Image (cartoon, each protein chain N blue to C red):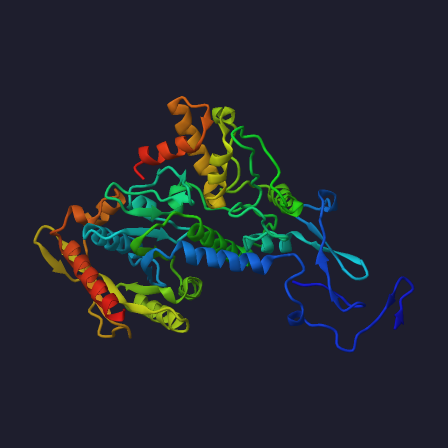
Length: 303
Length: 172
């Protein structure tokens, strides 16, 4: 017994520890986090395959390829949607021609904006003009480096939970660059999301993507393989694929799903929200369709 | 985070907090806990940095009691669109939001937009619930878009029929 002058206090020989206490006394913070996770799981239960298109390296064409892959899948009659998880540099809205798409509250959450061909696209590019940075209200001026990533993931979690995804054969997730981001997103999405890596045939890109693969391998997330983008340059004048990068002898240590040549016309069309399905005979379109074949075969083998 | 009354060796419980408990420092929160045995009270006071961290988790201390309803939104009474308090909702939730908004300076992408003609449009309770059940980040943009749609259609009220109509018209 200790007398403090204010109150008689007793010190217990075995003072309770954190794990001895049931619940959190009414703060309900952990409970809300768990409820959100359960809600996400339930809301995504109608999705057959979740594919994350990742790289670690920026500028390799992740978003462009993601849009072309989802377009090819859609053309095959599959139910598909895209989640643009690149909150700070969203490009899917433009690639899909949905930069000014209206947002409608539905019966079970946000209604997915759709392209004319029916692809659902959720992108921050539909919510924030390209001339503005994505911003969050904050009382902690100057310390965004501490809380920003947490806020981004909780915002993303909210979109996973409160969007009408419905029944889908494929949900493609376009990830932001950064090897450490690959790791964070792999942990965030968990093992139900399969990763597809994208690289270009340069030593620098291979180095960064290798590091990203190593990061993802530390998690429970499966990786299907990688796509080599910009493998040569398609010359429309002579109809040939010309060399763009020096030939790489080193391969990444996951399966190669296929290679796609750089096509200036495709790049121009992407800026206008036009997908390869409108130009199915181009080398890039053929290559993407071969990759989609490979993806479907490998996913079926894994089942 | 849990609080233990050392003298009773008993877990302290969150007690109802009112706005008066909110200190005048911008962005700071005050949460009172009480020992259920000796009724001794303590207050957890956060600085703006800690407030921001909790907010970034997307949670509210004390919890949400209206399923799907996000921070700062209030359920409305049937048909009229007038505000009605959500049953059992912890007042701290609003305190947290007030503190967030008071200290934020910049509004951010998720904050209310400028005053427009759409201010005269009312939302029915059911339509507002739908709005509350979409991600907070998209809410302002969705609200503005739907009100613009309603004005173009000559409606003075957003109801579920209007939302369904917008969905069809926008090709969703």
